[in-house]
Image (cartoon, rainbow, N blue to C red; front, side, top):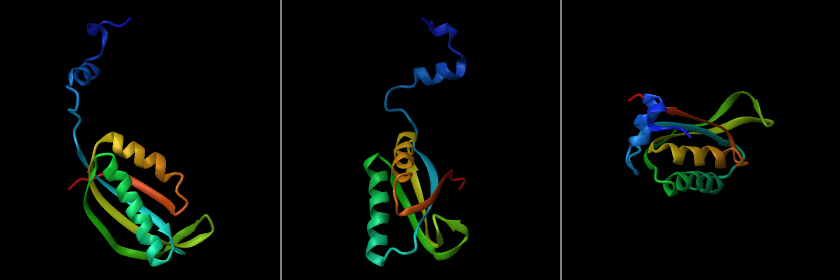
Length: 119
């Protein structure tokens, strides 16, 4: 059994944090959708991913589709084109964990990347 004094100081600070005190941080999420989706299918896939974030407490600050349909640098799952979407979100770690877990199994998403927003 560990006593409070045996816990390193960094972990002790986390242990003293009050419940609900986790901080919402800003992240940038970029994902690539399959190019063979029609407009309605693409909108449905984007809405599904946005809803997944919102359901877990994240807020979407900006959606950027300006990159749109592009050629991929190398084939991914025999696809040579993809539709790029960039989201700016404010989220807790739990929301990103759930997003990461669900998107890995989504057949419409070729690749995704989550990075901390520096702006």
